[in-house]
Length: 307
Image 1: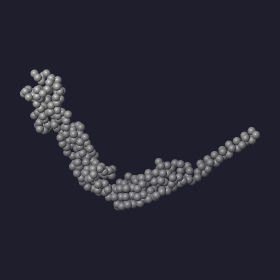
Image 2: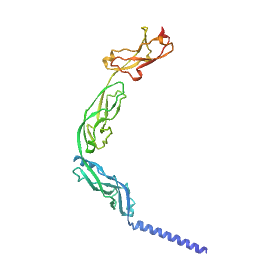
Image 3: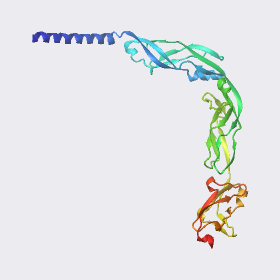
Image 4: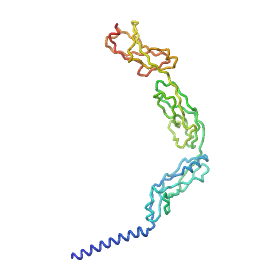
């Protein structure tokens, strides 16, 4: 009985081994032709062809597919190398010479030059071509001008020449520089340009060319000076506050040179006791600016005020 079981086991092992050997032989030595589908192969148009189209004054406004499914037929060993990474699909637009709607096939090639045939499902890809329009537009500076020393600006160019596909060009309502927050005394800043439609939405500028390509914003700033603060009192006495209360003032050179101190509103000591805290508003001469938090001064009344 044991002998019969051993013989059956040996026969199973032999049959399995022969089956595996036969499978390897058919798969790798005979290398049969097989077919598989590779999904989502990217569709491209070469930069060279796009440049040629642009030189004709045209631009692609729409392409219906950015990827295709490819049925690949090849020998088994070759087929294993055909993947989304090794395949490329492209649309040939070299014959297009005017705007319009075109239906073009996707051509497929293998990066490794494999010996295979390719079939693309849904061959025709819709390509919409439109003219490139050119015109001049005024440029505005988009500034957050809260910086106290800022006094004005001018642009390196007040206008810019724009070349864009018709679908974008027709939507252009205004052109501004990139938003800029002023927080220092840098005198020149280079900014890219931003397109807006009539509703204030930003337009895609990837296919747009500008001449000049960007704008310099050249700034002017106010002069700066640090001066003491003086408190006039109803009694006619004036008190100059300690240096820690000195404030920075800003203005044009002539105005700021004429100022050596800033006064507060009058202080009526009859309304306060010693050690009282009081806030006094500053009186700023015409043409003088200060930081928002410097428009008043907070002091503690001590015995020196009553001397």
